[in-house]
Image (tube, rainbow, N blue to C red):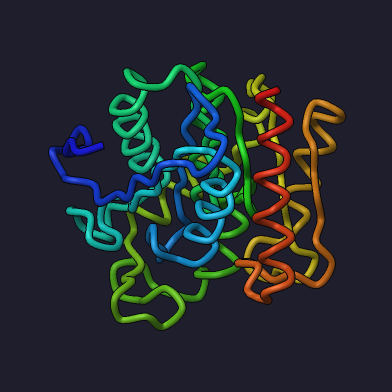
Amino acid sequence: MNETIKNSAGEQLDYLFTAGQGEKVAGWIVVLGHGVTGNRERPVIADTATALNEAGFDTLAFSFAGNGTSEGDFRDATITKEVGDLTSVLDAVSGSYANICYVGHSMGGAVGVIQAAKDDRIKALVSLAGMVDTKAFAETEFGEETPDEGLMWEDEDCPLSSAYMQDLCETVVSVLPQAQQVSAPWLLLHGTADDVVLHRDTESIVAAKGNAVKAVFIDGADHSFNEPAHKQLATKSVASWLREVVK
């Protein structure tokens, strides 16, 4: 892909397209979205894309507006706005691919649930430590900070905005209602040692959806599957699962 992708606000989104290797899977592309304070180069995204490329899938990893080198203001990077960013990315690739899988990490997972609930272009969905109870996350992680004055995890590059907190706590609250509307095959991976987005979020999806989803809990893995063994298990699980879906 050589085209420029812009969201509805006219902000250019940075992305990396990589063609699949070996026995390519025709007609499919995997779009990957990161979590809050992240970007497309975060290892959990980049390494998952690599595993998918090795399995024959074309991939497009992108940074939401205001993150990485994408245009926009980080303070505006709410779940609701990022759903719009994802829509723009899907618009850009859907003319060339009949089937799209979306892989979202953390907050990017919540974005994917909202999108997949209303967009039948997503033929498969993967949540990596996906956020479900957005209000609980915001209150637990940032409840002691003052919006528009405080920072996310004391990071000077990540100011905590009132727009962000309002979106998570009042507009979205939880993506469990949207999860009920997801009909695409859905894989959820979560580490049991995740202390950022607790694995109970994934458990709530399993309780609601039952056998309609596949959940894999990786013992001892943290939020971003940082240990090499955990990351390898997570990335290979995604690639193997999607290969089965496309059969």
